[in-house]
Image 1 (tube, rainbow, N blue to C red):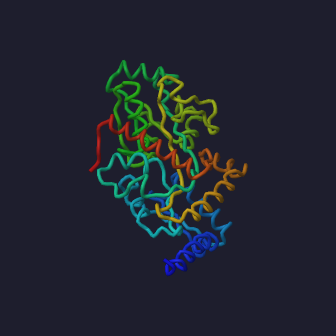
Image 2: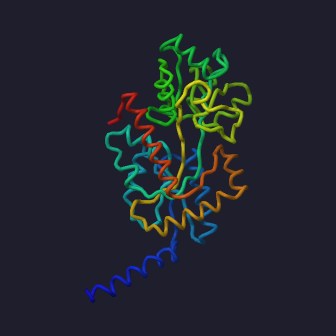
Amino acid sequence: MKSMLPLLLFLCAETPAIAQEYPAKPIRIIVAFAPGASTDILARAVAQRFTEVFGQTAIVENRAAGGGGTVGTAFAAKVPPDGYTLLMANNSTHAVAPHLYKKPGYDALRDFAPISLVGWVPLALVTHPSLPVRDVKELVALARSRPGQLMYSSSGTGTTLHLAGELLKSLAKIDIVHIPYKGAGLGAIDLVGGQVQFAFLSISAGLPFIRQNRLRALGVTTLKRTALFPELPPIAEAGVPGYELPNWVGLLAPAATPPEIVTRLNGELARWMAQPETRQKMLSLGVDAGGGSAASFAETMAHGHALMGKTIQRAGFKIE
């Protein structure tokens, strides 16, 4: 037993040293999607902040190999858990894909250590102006009177934008047709052109068209109103009780990352996101700033995971 004492003392002394010395080299943040979308933009903002405060370069590495973000996410789950490779994840990678794909290559809740919620990206239910509806109740009533005739676009099968429509279909008990596109932008173009009747879009993507009266906004997918578009009611209040789709973006590390490193990263992000200028900048990017503890972010992830699981099960589809 005495021979073990020096080793135990060494291990106990080593743990705080890890946090004190971190980071001692560059940090990379994996994004499992192509550059340009909200997850990538937020990852770059976080990387810039880490570079400024830590004195070590933080870079973003895009690993957009398809599979709804599962390929890049599976890679991030298997890197050494030393705090030098992180993942900017979202609702698609950690709430949708794990239920949609038979073998995503990772366990969304067990294989990662939550660091911090970075932001909410609220979605708006928008329609083409030619559709004779002014609110969510009227859209539901019209869909019931025209079963199988109203079409909505999405950024592809199994994406969050697709699941937003499936959730509406399930809760409102309406028969609507999903038209998948290779990206939200292409779907939005056809929506503005009148080829499809409605869609769910990020507020930042839809707002220019809404302001120009080329699209009509009916509601948001969050349970609360968003500062991005405060006059727009939650869909749950506007005609479809129980509707909720929490579209989050957050920073994760591999599961075995030392908790001292997770705590340090969380604290830095909390300080940064508490600044009024940071929150205003995020609003300009179409994001409600996050923050909070790692534990609260873990609860957000678990809630979204369960909610999307129920939605996908009701929809009855899987991707091999």
